[in-house]
Length: 511
Ligand SMILES: *Cc1c(COP(=O)(O)O)cnc(C)c1O
Image 1 (tube, rainbow, N blue to C red):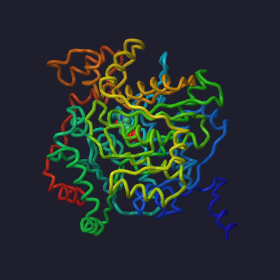
Image 2: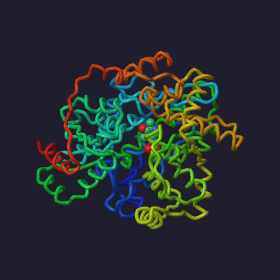
Image 3: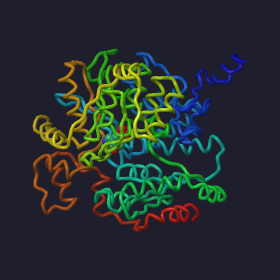
């Protein structure tokens, strides 16, 4: 039996990698199936059953490759049931179609103090594009590969960034429709315009009267409504989600850690094999977890520094081993990190403990009591890889101003949190290793807070005048996707009550 199994798992000399649930209820799942399912049947997240390993030759080879080729190498190790041709097609439609405004896709910008990995050159100017340009392609290919002929309806509730990035990624992808709900009282003017001007024959955007929680609860209620699911199934439609628990959103993010290391090798900042650190502005723990996978695969990463804003639940967890979401929620100037439940942490705990029963128990405690505590053994292991810190809004703004004065470089509010935490990490540990600050949004996307941090007068300026003002300080053009909003046609005007969300979804699904 064992021999036969290993034959089945070998294809073209590549060992087939399967996926299992963090909570133990599913295993032996191919990646295409994991991407279609999103969440495992037991409520857990899909993780690879083994960790692919690479050597220094693999990493040095990357210095000679384009970003797309780098992505093909990494994805090929994780998505072994996709052919290289399928992966190359997905990658080229995501990163090669001119939607990114820099051909390097994820360039490293060398400042005097730190190298900065810029993940915001995609169509919506935020790092969500790195994954949400690729996920729709991986999902559509998965449907074809597995013979799934149902139409997929992606439902998203958004507080801003994810909705637009998902719309942009799924627009005109066949066999898939996307419906985004955003709260009338919750997104910025620019974010509102970004969504309401979205083109594509398979997209729909609806404003919900209420706040983000209303929109999110509405979407959750639709997902758990069995009758609704059956009515859709009768019309051959299945529901799915685009949020960051899907493996197809995580795996694209592993690529840029390798890419950054290769770029530092190329520009002579480091020698082959030299260990470096990354500091990552963190919310749902997806971005930094991708760095953890890169390290486990053999990329020379010493420490991953987890940077938070005043919603510092992860700082406390990584320092004490207690995860406690029962605390005040702070609205900050880095809103994409305003999160108290970091879903992807479950994957880390699964890899570090290899104990599904324990993980399941912790997640149950989290949902029932809002708190869990890992043992000292687990905490010590986590501390070997992670260092954590946080900063408030005042320190974030001060950092934006200081970095601009010293380096003539404008950070956005999220990246500034990481920048300041990176400084604190160096001060606290005395580490002299090279450290890469991961930058997750263009400063133009959060121009109001950025201008305020720079001490600029905003009174009387509308959104576009503010963008112009920032552009003159930053000496770099406003990204096309934002500049074009000024004249873009409004295509989506629907507004609904919270109680009408289900009807809106059913109408769109069956039209
Ligand atoms: C989503 C987001 C983050 C947080 O990333 P996670 O993967 O959720 O930890 C940070 N910055 C920006 C700008 C984001 O959009």
